[in-house]
Length: 355
Image (cartoon, rainbow, N blue to C red; front, side, top):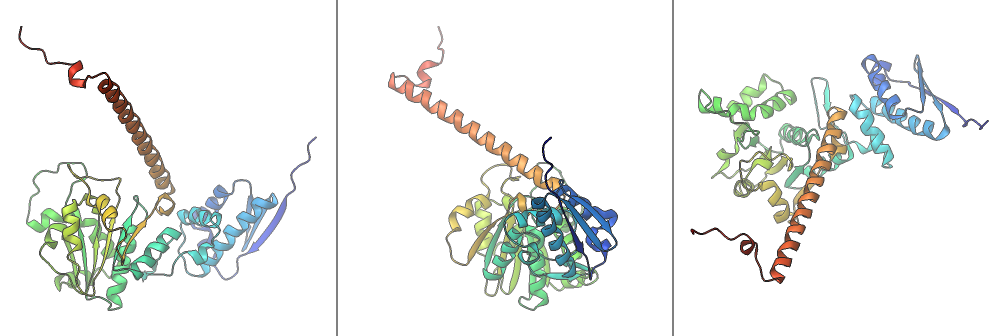
């Protein structure tokens, strides 16, 4: 009979925090810890958490629980996705409690802060550069964090106004004629920006700030011909700009202004042509005071399934690209063979003339 693997038991005392805050409603965070470390038995009694299993996996689970405890003490409002993210950060050799950035905003009891290393680096880049591009898949917080930084800058009087803009491009659909005034027509495209700004600021104060021009939400077409000074500007859905629109937008930069451009280069809804977001990376990559932050599925802070969806689509796109490359290579090889025989594809398929 084979010897059983040795086991160890570790007890962690959660002092100074409410257990419901550490474990989550209906113990959702506890279930996530068990999911991240399925080989560890987790038992909670009162304010004590007991971990039992093989020494190696128990140490890993203990490190995760210790970090969740530390973040809870520091005021982090943890969700299930934060447990998985913290486990990934620990696997990368960093401590989540120190890797995650400082709070950007605190509004209505909610704290907005970076929740991954990639997000922390992105926010740091916004502090250190005049123009920052946040490029990554859905759910990585690139727009949300940029808008939080814009509100923070306004509250600190670092800028005198916030300008939020995005191109009015339909997501693969044709909505046809929209009734109402011009504002009524463009509002559906800008609704995500309105929702975010109302979440970060007092909803009663937002209409007054918009009426005074302190906060402006407008389609990208309204930017032409303007010089924007002393402003924090966020361009969202930048993958749906043309190269010409991207150049137009970037050249609106005035004195005392900071720009953040966000987008997902894999979700282009332009009816034709090239995305300005894809082109600008090649043109401005080495320009000083311009930074490109590339977020990945590891930075997704929505439902954990979103990260897996992003990875699955990325793998699918890579296979398609590889298949197209193989077809192009085979076609080029056939063309070279025909040229060596003194024939062209047209020679092989001559047009039929009249008899």
